[in-house]
Length: 274
Ligand SMILES: Nc1ncnc2c1ncn2[C@@H]1O[C@H](COP(=O)(O)OP(=O)(O)OP(=O)(O)O)[C@@H](O)[C@H]1O
View (cartoon, rainbow, N blue to C red):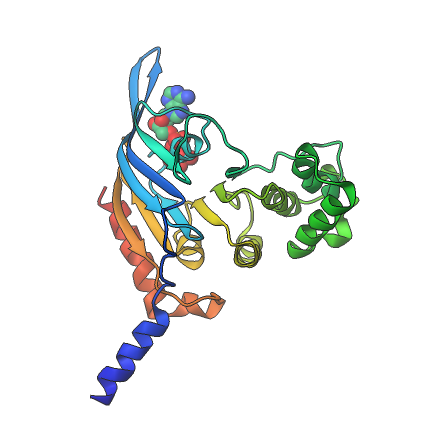
């Protein structure tokens, strides 16, 4: 009896935070994309359906070439679906909406003539934010990614990991409601990846964004996400949705737990059976 009750309590403590009431931030409905090429049509995505509730951190994993980047481009409004539609914050998406949806890509694409601070400030400047306010916001974000001391450096004076940190800070300075991240840590070594993952979670917690995160790393997906969507080989379909019931804040110790291992294994098995 007592054991059952304590097991139940443990399960409740580990349950993901309930989804906030209200419409999802992103709804993807019967999304299909076909690239027309000189060698014929290439169906990249086939009848994709999913929803992302406000404030959730959702991962997308799948074999190489399954259409993850194509899906992200469509979520950013940069590529139009062949069929189906995307609804962002209750409006059908027909073109990029940077105030709602921001993107951080695999390679940091910083303006080479601007310092780290100026790069993070840039989206705020474009939006007409007053100088003192944008400086404060940019500095706060640079501090969060551990680069306050490097604010006056130009991109070529920073390491790859540092440039990617600046890029993430800039993604957040745009202050979109939804942040799309396409393998943002792919070019980095394992240790930097883990550190940046933690920094990302810190900013996400503080700024309450909805994040959609594409990765090839299953460990990263389990560590960061509330839910992981698994895609099949091309044409990409969603073949599994794995809820990650680990408590937050996440800790490195969790990676050594049986639960973590089982979640990783389940995702791996789904990918292998596609
Ligand atoms: N502009 C394009 N024209 C024609 N085919 C394309 C184009 N872009 C992507 N594709 C094809 O569509 C499929 C999906 O590509 P996409 O880059 O979206 O996959 P991915 O899952 O992001 O790949 P990876 O994991 O290797 O980055 C691939 O077969 C790719 O060759």
